[in-house]
Image (cartoon, rainbow, N blue to C red; front, side, top):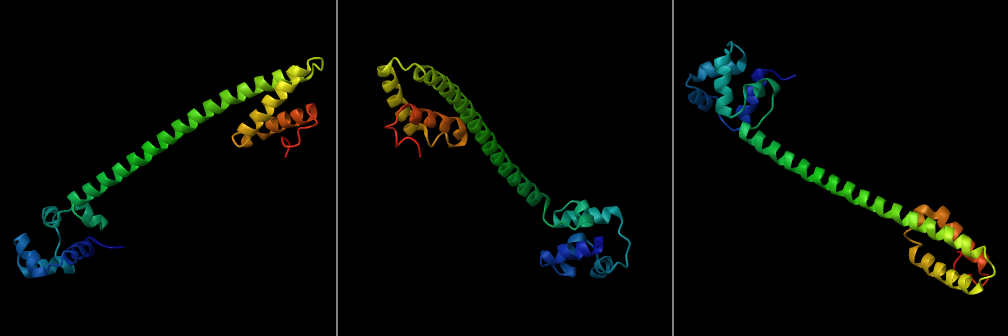
Length: 176
């Protein structure tokens, strides 16, 4: 675990400063600064605040060992917040799209169930062959147009295809 002294030295080295240069910035002698980095000198809070200010970091950074200036940290955090806001916006948009698709699919499913019920009713009336033939042709077209969209709901769709096949012996291309 790094100590405050290790962190102070790391900050100085990261900036490429010599002990003499940092001592001048702090307004102390080089020997005084050497005692700080060697741990021979106790550091009052006022001196820690002064060292942190020279390095452009908070006093807490000296204890935690985090590098960078407060401005750099703030800029990095602001950038990350913007990235997260963009990600959140994408998630919200995606949920909205998915919600709209679900509403559409539910509406389509309801229409399809109605169509299926109507088909069952018409196909169970053998006396009206013209109506049956038109309905079978309509269903063939419907199946062809909607087959890819209804793959997730294939059980009722397969039932529809089966019903059309059973009602029209010439219907080989409908059932796969």
